[in-house]
Every structure is written in C-alpha cells, then in structure tokens.
Amino acid sequence: MINRITKLLAFAITLSFSNCTPAGSSSMREGPLKKLPNIVKSEIAEMTSACRQVEGKPRTSPDFLLIADINGDKISDYVINPMAFNCIGAESLFSGSAGTNIEIYIGTTDGQARKAFMSTAHDVELDMSTKPARIRMLVEGALCGQKLTSETAHSDYKACWRPVLWSKSKQKLEFAPLSQVDFSDFE
Image (cartoon, rainbow, N blue to C red; front, top):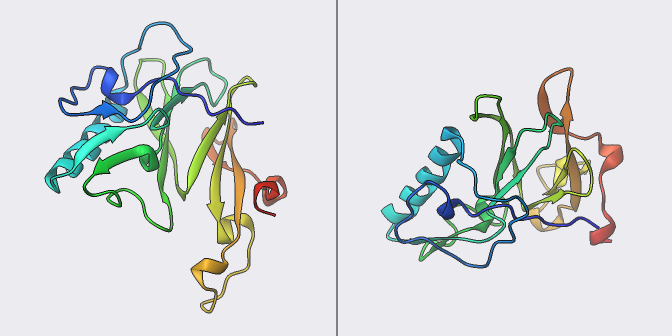
C-alpha cells in the first residue's frame, strides 16, 4: 500500500504566508524543518500571489509539498501538488476536471533544486518504504495507454496510477513504461 507522506507544509518554512494556514496537520518524519530551495519557494510564492490577486485566501494541506529522496542521491527532492493548494474563494484556480500540473524538483548538492518533471495529474503519492522513494501519479487517457479519438468524451477516459521513475543515464524523471500502469483502484 502506498503511504502518502507529508514532510512539510510550505507556509511553515522560510516563506512568509501571512494569511496562510494549514487545512490539516503535518506529520513530520525528519527532525527540524529545512530551508526550501529558491525555485520551490518561488513557485509557492507565485501560487500564493495568484490566489490573492483573485481575492482568494491561500491555504495548504499536508499533501501540498512532499519531500523525499526520489533519485537515490540522498538529497531531498520536492513534489508540489497544486491540487492540495486551496485558494478559498477561487477553488479551481490551480486545478479542474482534467487535473493539475504536478511539478517535481530534484535537489542539488548546493541546497537548491531544478525542475525535473511536470505532468497533468489528479493526484500524486510517494512510497517511502523504499530507498529511493517511489512516486506515482493518478493520470488518465493516453497516459494510461488508452487509445483516444476526437470522439472520445472526457467522461470515457480511463484512470490509472502510473509510476514516475528516475533515469540515471538520462539524469531525469520520466513516466514508467505502460506495462507498469496500475488500474486496480479503478476496475
């Protein structure tokens, strides 16, 4: 079973979300909170600003920012899940019926990070029982191997969990082959 692991809430780090409060509590598995890389802080700040610009009230949930070593280098990597960023008053600002853009940042030795993957998905989970942690995304349609036509209604798209794997030779994250897609939650 995949365990959704919450490592930190973005508002609790060095960013100042003056009106941000959590929608849930955080279960911290690593000692003290660590400083976020600038690129991650910037993405969170942009989301907060966009929410406020439409007169929304930004709130995060425990699943908004997930931190784990995804590529096996023993450096924290970061997953931003906009589905868990609640902009009260503008709930669909960052997500809709087609999902949201999940972003994954790979940590670097200088304490920063680089964007390594982005895909539209409905959810993301980390399996922390393995080293490195495994990640999978709830996707649909062609990403599940479904043959789509211009006549295929969105309501007919099939959903699946698809792993995202680190390619050591390419130094990037990519979706696992379709043979690893998991439909068990949707059959």
